[in-house]
Image (tube, rainbow, N blue to C red):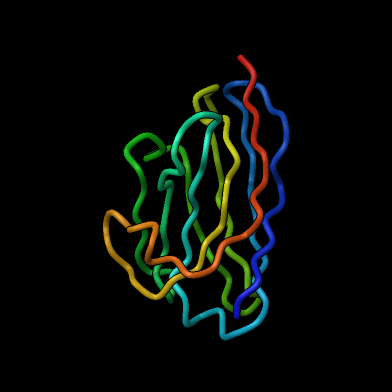
Length: 124
């Protein structure tokens, strides 16, 4: 079992920045691919970004490419999402997830563990 807890979500103005963090506990963190997904009201949960086991490879959704950066610290069992140039369309609940398969684009059903989510609201 892996437990994931997200933090860092809040209300921010368009053009601003936020850094989300996800703390993991349980099984060996470095053995998992880590991803960020988001779900806006009335929409399906969608892929945002994914990082491989060592942190050497990353993928991003086209909608966030160039604005968001994913990173991980295996010594601290954390994965982060730096979000810059935020837009109202980025408003959503952001979820951290852990899985065993690294692919592009990631498949949501290949992530076995999910956090409870953190709310990001971007005002215009």
